[in-house]
Amino acid sequence: MVKASALYIVIVIALVIALLCSSLIGAAYFYRLQYQQKLRYDVLGTNLQSAVNLLLATDEDLSKGKKSDLFGSGRDSVFLKKLTWGVYDVCIAEAFVQKDTLFKVFSTANPIDSTKWGALYVIDEDRPLSVSGKTLIRGNAFIPKAGVREAYVDNKAYEGDKRIIQGQTKNSDKKLPGLNNTRLKAIQALFTLTPTDSTLLNDSLTISFRSAPRVFYLRKQNISLQNCKLSGNIMIRSDSTVTIDSTCKLQGIIIAAKAIALKNGFRGTCQLFARDSISIGSNCSLDYPSSIGVVRSDDEVVKQQEKIAVGQNSRIQGIAFTFEKKEADIKPIISLEKNVKIYGNIYSQGLLNYKDGVAVYGNVFTSRFLYQTTFTRYENYLINITLDASKLSHYYLSSDLLPISTSKRKILQWIESN
Image (tube, rainbow, N blue to C red; front, side):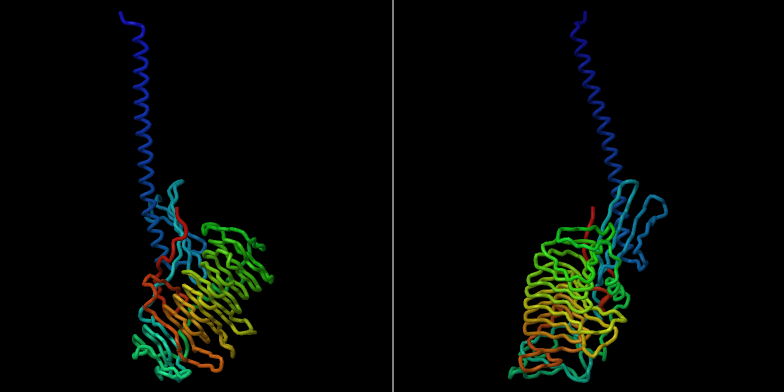
């Protein structure tokens, strides 16, 4: 005769078996879901890379965004968008299946064309280029037909390499190679952007490039930015002067104003465009990829000299340029104080004024050099200056704004992803 307790044992064993079976079924179901999700994300990853490649290869206007089916199957959908962002472009690539989405936001720039690249390009004004002191020119150079010569300045002779130019020399033209007109128009349009906000708080703000841009229009009020952290899809527009304190942390934003001033010790990554002047204090650092430019609109009446002034011991990694369509009697000027370091490109449509210890690791386009002492002014003299194209990183990317870039695009910086 079976004991009554055996019934309890059977029930317990049945429960254990039921739990084990349900666990196995649940594990199998969960594994299947995870396996299917992994397959979807593998496909999404492949499609996302295809979207990135399409954005790098296409010249199509994608400012409003475009959905596309990669293979016509209805299952490989991507979203492509390209925004003009100062001298660079920002691209948005998305791949999605049902509710699953992968995205990448990145900026693009252009490699350097080696056939057009040189440490120096100075226009031909039918006079030679003179060198003196501890001057170094390393890289190809486009110089006047009159050539380059050694000179005595303040009773000091040229002390550099006897070759003077350590690279190939080619004849320059009477005018500088032109800037990209399409990119210039995009930069000029920054001064007339439709605003979304009229008040900029001294606070922290980060805006994704996947959302609408925040355009702060400060009108004609002089404003000083202090103790703020701004990054991402942010543009500041002003009809007056914008002063930026060293306490500000700027990452990737654009500022377009009549005049811009950076106080001593500022450090950040940004793009600054002005109509009249940009002043950078001493010991400042604009990290790569930054750009600064003074740009006059096509119909603007010139009232004062365009000027970019960079203070002592400051460093710029990126692009510095001046442009005016209607040439004025007073030429635009880029002025570099003692021991300024430029890693990238200088394009001075007018004068490049410099002091002792200036070094450009990249290239210089200018109409004329200017070196001033207390009593004397020297034009087209290179005195105690370093122009060294070989010191620029091989990974450096420029902008299609400049005449030394190729039409090919590469990824400059990864900005956002999931």
